[in-house]
Image (cartoon, rainbow, N blue to C red):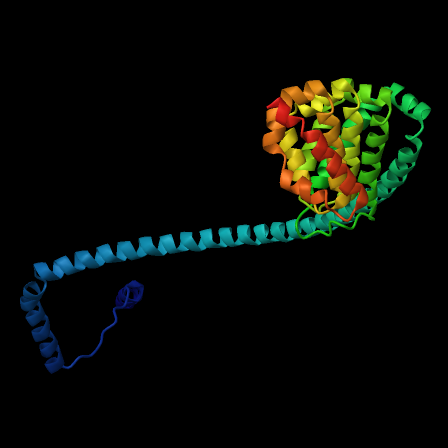
Length: 337
């Protein structure tokens, strides 16, 4: 019985959890106890309101730091996003540069082609107008030209072309170089107008259907400075003289605003041929009694008589004779005043 009981007790002791123990010297335990008691007494004194405030501030700073860290992370994400967009934009920019370079190259090629076409058209225009200038000396040819439904359009284009040529002139250009294709083109057009105006049917056509061309011619004569394009000036003056043979044409050009000051301006040109044709035109005007009576005062006030006197003493025989005839004709103005 005892053995059985003793065996049962041992089993129970094995089933119980064994506790772990550490050996500490009594003196050390007393010292530790003393320190704990001291901390218990001094801790409330240390942990005062300032410390608590500092702890609260520390918590707030930690919260702000976390927020800043979050913001910094967001900024990093945004930076990556913008960096990606920048790279995409740079790629698009490079693509656009390549496209622009290709377009610029195409534009340069187109300009070159256009320049070649313009040169070709100018050469062709010069050749055609020179031939047509020669043909227009034939009356039947002029009649056939004027009967065409394109005649008005042709002479409108002729006026616009001459105007564009004169507008392109500048002080630094070689005004005496009239051998270029462009100059020959314009001279051919002016020559055609002169030949057409030399015929009665041509004068009627210009006066009735193309007065704009006459206005353009007078305007361009005033725009060209002394010494500029004398050949072109002579052809234009010849066309106005031919128109003045028609009484209606004479009235129209003589009554145009600034006509007599224009003649005064042209008489100062250094080219003798220009001066010769100016005086021919002026003589045509003053020999018409109706025009002379109406414009006597304006003629007397506009004309540079000293210049005409000087031309009457020119070494150029034709210029000298015509200038003297003009002075004799202008004596009539004394009776008209």
